[in-house]
Image (cartoon, rainbow, N blue to C red):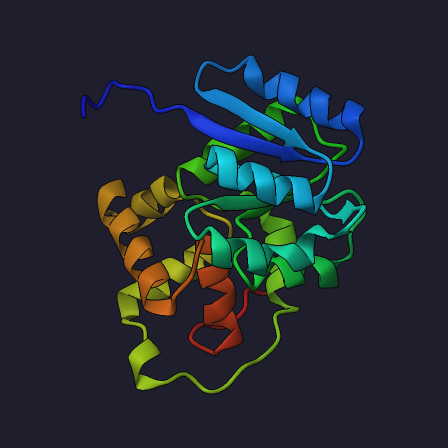
Length: 221
């Protein structure tokens, strides 16, 4: 594929407040590289549209009429492992965000944020990045529940630990590449292998697993 060819990011907006959903969709539709494939007002509608329209990214409200968005992350990814889910947070607690982070959410987006922040988050997640403010990321990783001691199969190399420690600080792949004097392609490959090694759907889930299982230390507040 020509490196100059632009790939369209397919987005599904899930929010039971139609005005909010339409506002988010309108802001995204105006971007030349983003296509809103649908709007859903419930988890049931979201599942139907994911099946029918195969979005790349699902912007998922937490408080929906037929369930909680954070609790639906795991089941949705189990059925559709190729999608990326960003939770629309509102005033959701840290504990709820951890519930979404551990099974594979790719980020959290405050409903009160600006539309440029929304567009940036969609593009970041599409590029394999984490859509979480670094301060919130560090706080959430402190709350990740401890698991069993790491197995030999999940032992990380010194380079992998170094990269994950920088991911935990909120650095993007290009920023990590600059810090470690590596190419962005090399860092992307490391992150992809780490996600595969840990069985993670997203970089954020892989990071949560690494902290939970004691493979790396959680970042300081």
